[in-house]
Image 1 (cartoon, each protein chain N blue to C red):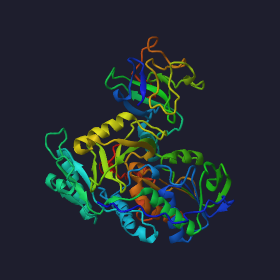
Image 2 (tube, helix red, strand yellow):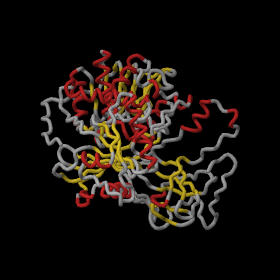
Image 3 (cartoon, rainbow over the protein chains, first blue to last red):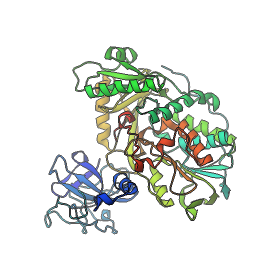
Image 4 (tube, rainbow over the protein chains, first blue to last red):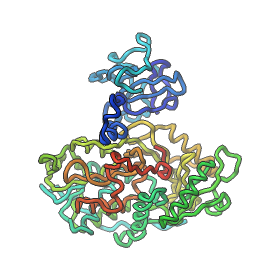
Length: 140
Length: 406
């Protein structure tokens, strides 16, 4: 089970969350102009990354806020958590190298610790409250 | 139920050849679907200069990790047609492959726990009958007669209100199915190459001309992708996208028990599916993890949920011990139906998206995909499952009959 560092509530079990799929998929700017192929692309085609994946999560039984997360889909290590509508952080330096961050133990079914494993490149909740208002060109 | 002995292994199963520098066709993925495709390419289309590439060991992916259930009680005409064709092939394959893989037609029940379930199930029975698929609606008393260990009391949270029943459905010994196909493929001259991971593709313009692997480059005129959970990874290497999301799906077995469970019981609503293996283990499946993943293990709370459902439905299981759990990576589509056919890359074909139910479809997937690869055109059974359906909107929404929510 994942231990997910909610930016508002701290680390909680995966069972408190709802998965929202790939992050950063903007709603088409001019829906009327889209061809069938482009609609198919928007509706049905998502990245299926093997590795670091930007995805959306909803803390459904906690603060009920959406946020974005970078997670490795092979090791399940959580690399960063950041507000909706902000760009994907650069996590080229693995966050797992720091203490108090996600477990890299292959046998472990839990990632993260009790402290939110937010890398330096992501935005700490105290400094910038997580926004749920998506900016232009982004979807929640 | 059957307590027959496992079949003896034949002395010889398959060779382990070095890859040749070129083949008439290369199949990526040495699981059930890849092997079945190779078998029917050789048997039905006379293509024997072919290779099956497997990145690990033969049939060690989802083929080794599924709950072995075989049924064809799908709702829509397109699915009923292809899965029923698969079931008819399952019925003749042990003889055809000269290998008894313990195909046991012990029947499958799909339980209904709500009025919505009941209506959907009765509708499905009607649809099945119209499509020539054997199906019956059972009331709780009839369920009890067929499977006495099932709890049909109405004082549980989701009481059993009835079930669809397909008597011809059942289970087979999955490893032996793979070995049976592999042995026949080998006999027909197919090269099965294990520990051979595909790292890229050679293309001439938009036409595929070869496969790059960790064992060297292999030239070929045709490539068939049968890589289940990793299909979108391969597609990306080849330069196109698939509407696939990969999720871990887990299953578990108990220690061995005397025969107690005479059929297969599935429940969509409380989400567990159980059969008893020939050797005696209770084989149980769960739902997929909600998130994308390529790790072949699943979340513990999914097992917890599945076990709670199992114990409520089968109080006798309360003291059974879990022996082993594992996960496979399933390739899900948004309409819960497979993708079989041509791709945007010329001479490259794809068979994927079988999601949580690929095992049952193995023979029909192989037969129709072999037809598509050999002729370059769809088989009438896989035509509706082409990639184009996501553009035309002719989706085949089988979430209700897929039995695993995803």
